[in-house]
Image 1: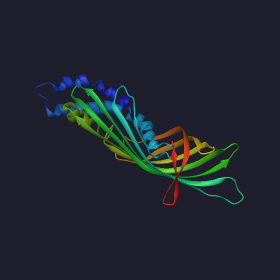
Image 2: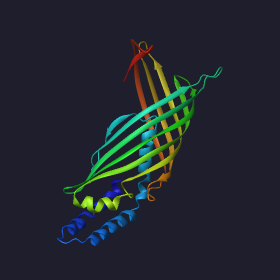
Image 3: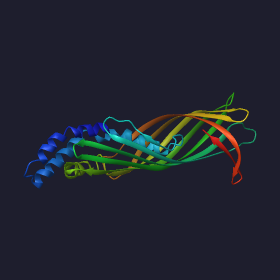
Length: 263
């Protein structure tokens, strides 16, 4: 995303000079909008497909924690990523088998906000929202010394939408119509197919336990519906996660279920 916008920034001085003329005919404004739009299209916004797929993957992956992420960026002011998740998982015990099949589901929502200050008194506040769900089948295979091998196959559907708030005369008069449906102000749906492999580890101590897990996930996302013909991507996303928890049971129950401190 930043690469395309950097190219737009090079147009800033030229746009500022054009807008400062005392007479600015509507036909001239239309020509400028068209030129800016064509330059953005020539910059191949379809290359952003991998980034869009990463957002969709981040929204639904069951092993990525719900949290607020503050991202360090040199070209964007205070980008913030909020992720909310509802992960579900149920394992089945088979008589005479030590391995356990399981079914899992994940429903997630992602909100990514970033502000681009490309000229004095000019800004674009962009917002990407993604939500969707996936359903997976897998198996836990016990190994030695508290280790277990985990594999799973997931399928899902994810939605991503882009919007932007433009501030300043150049942004509102030129960039808004030039970027609509190309960089901002569009929505798309994609299918997700993925495979996961990882390890679970559990160690019991006298009064507490430790659990750890690693996951390597490979997902393929492919758009099947989009509000803009320019937003059409087919991308692969690989993620690796590591989670370690210390669990301390406490003498309390909620709804008949024992409670524990987890950190």
